[in-house]
Amino acid sequence: MRAQAEIVVCMSGGMEVDLRFLPRGTPVRVLYPDDVDRASVPDFLRGHDQVRVCAGLPTGLVLCDGTAVVPGPATVTAPETVALLKAWFDHLWAGAMSADARAVEGLTEQERTILRLLAGGVTDDAAAARIGTSARSVRRVMAGVMGRLGARSRFQAGQLAARRGWL
Image 1 (cartoon, rainbow, N blue to C red):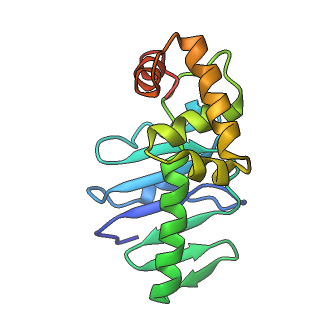
Image 2 (cartoon, one colour):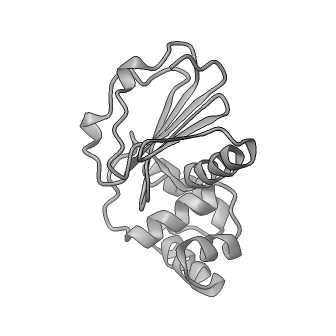
């Protein structure tokens, strides 16, 4: 790989990328499935590189300077398709959790997902669409989380959740 701008990778769908061969100095973002053994995430992914975990990664993907590689392997260079794949990756990235995040005791997966989405600036309606529920359900879940945190506002809930390592 001789990328210069950025490399993004979804490590899923049977696609394995040997990250040791990524060029140094090029920003890298890697998404792993949330069931990955976090100790197996390479130590060298530091500095400008970022690693997150995401529930339900459907397929593997590598995007590199206007080219996409998907399982098969197939190479995609059509600018519109590469842009669509990049937008899809960015959407997943926004809702993903840092691979360094501590395990959260006492939160359901739905609560964790909603907290991450809202902390990323997603509206109740958008969070509901993302997880397949209603905006009312999102507000109900957040009210429950706020009660457990002892928060009087969603802003305060975000701060308290971050302090506890929930985000």
